[in-house]
Image (cartoon, rainbow, N blue to C red; front, side, top):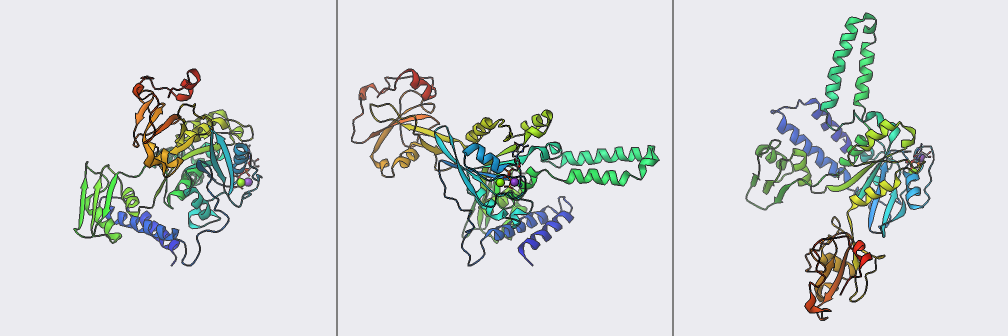
Length: 451
Ligand SMILES: Nc1nc2c(ncn2[C@@H]2O[C@H](COP(=O)(O)OP(=O)(O)OP(=O)(O)O)[C@@H](O)[C@H]2O)c(=O)[nH]1
Ligand SMILES: [K+]
Ligand SMILES: [Mg+2]
């Protein structure tokens, strides 16, 4: 039996198993089994080189953004709009067959945008080019999940993430149908059909949920942070299980069973939050990738304003229309916000900084400290640095003398003072003292920076 069949079988068993206190341990174990099989599925087959299907595009620029979505939602149209690089767009599905890179110039930075083939349900199991597409998504700093507003609009209510709302609707509608069937005998014969259609509508998920599930099943976690669980394998000593707060989802026995499933018999586990079994499995697997995701609802030109309004209010969502060029600037600013890039301008001693050519740092990739900044300029620079002078929102006064550990913020200006050099105007360290931090580019317009 193949891995996919085994996963399906366990999933079926989980669906059959009632959820209660008594089956909790068994379900936990099954979840761990599935997680292990999924990891196996991701390993490249023995003897094959990794990938090699024209999907590996060299990283370029200060960040990478991937366009993920069902076929014909407008990914290629969006790439052409934002980057000027042409990517074939047409009304038939699977127009795009490889990865097509473009560059967005925004706020003096360059961001690589990748157009990808559409993916469909089952992509994580290898349907279509799903696996390659997902591999590219994993390598990016931000995912733009492109959705067709006209297809997702009516599912706004139904695609709430919890099951509770759906179940509530099912129950209420059942009562109403039953009532109608009793009052009007002619309705009686339609009852089963009407009810089945409603059930089917409720069961059918929005594209957003399907894609999220596909990405989650291969270890991507969208807009989540790693669980606050400390986990360390050991050589001896058995399992020590602790928590800093009362736990409601996992207890010691369940934790032991899951670890046992992974054949781990010596380890230290400390829960720092009320995490779930899935969180624990994520920590044990250790290969999860936490990525930010913005949901982009395209084609709002074909739906009503009320639906646009509902979609726009969903978390992390931006509504756009490529055809009418609507809201694309909002999409760019949201993208910028989520990427959290930090531009730092270098100021040579006695000169004004070059505001057109920042050093770009990122908290997620490499960090934003003065040390990261120096390493970015040159890897041997760090040993010559005595301290740095910082202007900008991260400084308490201008300029602030900072060490290597200081965390820089967007649009800071930094002057490096080397060990041999003498600081210009040494006694006047806090001469240009100012307590109100302001964006340096605004300040700079008014008065040139000293030192
Ligand atoms: N009404 C409307 N149609 C759009 C919009 N954006 C794109 N389209 C149309 O949607 C169709 C599909 O666009 P593509 O850019 O090829 O979509 P894709 O997601 O790249 O599709 P695949 O590469 O096949 O996965 C084309 O006919 C576009 O003209 C929009 O904002 N409004
Ligand atoms: K298309
Ligand atoms: Mg395309």
